[in-house]
Amino acid sequence: MDIDALSEEKVQEKDALFNQIEQVEKERNEALEVSLEKVMFEAFAVVKETARRLKENKRLVVTATDLDRMHAAAKPMWSCRVSRRFGITAG
Image (cartoon, rainbow, N blue to C red; front, side, top):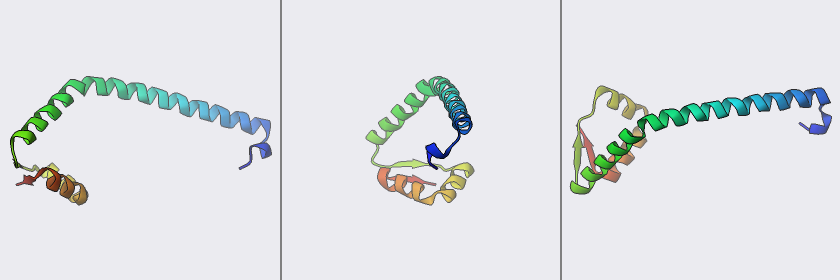
């Protein structure tokens, strides 16, 4: 759509709509940042512990829960790549 073909009123409507979208995105990003800050230290600890275990063990054996199996069934390629990359065997 050519901007010149739009009336001034339509341009202002679209501008207001884009401003609303930007405001919603800004609010969403601020809320996301708060949420991420709440879990940051725990997430770092999990990643650090996982890295330590992978470094110390040639092979890591884990037990899959029903939820894990459900997710693996929904995304089998992801599960397969992780297993091959890290030598993880799910039981």
